[in-house]
Length: 249
Image (cartoon, rainbow, N blue to C red; front, top):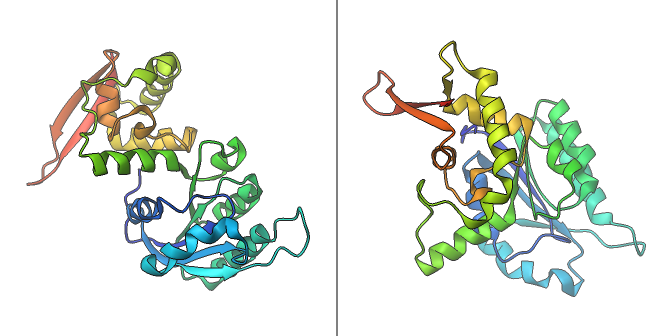
């Protein structure tokens, strides 16, 4: 994962199909990747379906953009958000975009922004179509953020590397295959792969890959949960920080 938190990001939220109750978690997640220079949310604020958003906009400094639904069945909000994104792109004042939506209508927008050299982070629910997820550099499921917030509220502890979540067994074979092939793709002559490079490669292969999808906070914890892999922690040559390498066994 690229932790370039000095990136200038435009955060654009589709109020029509994104729940408002975890906005704090969304913005905290965005902060991991950059500084939100623009924070805008789009919707028809005359409708009762978006009333929940009104109470959280001011405290999170998000600018609401009014877009009336001129024709029944047509999503004018999407069009307004796409036009604004292109306007922001041409200002040259951002390095990337965070598109918060579960709507496949933003697939072409994400692709176009990446073609322009922008880093594109997507956020949405697990119902988000695969096409939109694949069009982003990274896609984050909102359900992950909701689980994390509940654990914080209840004082729950995150899963350790020794704890294996119950649901992960169904995806064991596919996950192990993905990790194994990715490690081998970038491994040196001794079979070792640097964890940071592995994380970047996994995102290129599957933009929605996230250790938190499997119940772990970190990629290294996920890898340690399987006996198929070996971990080697090396000195980085600096006073602080160590390098983590992995290989298949």
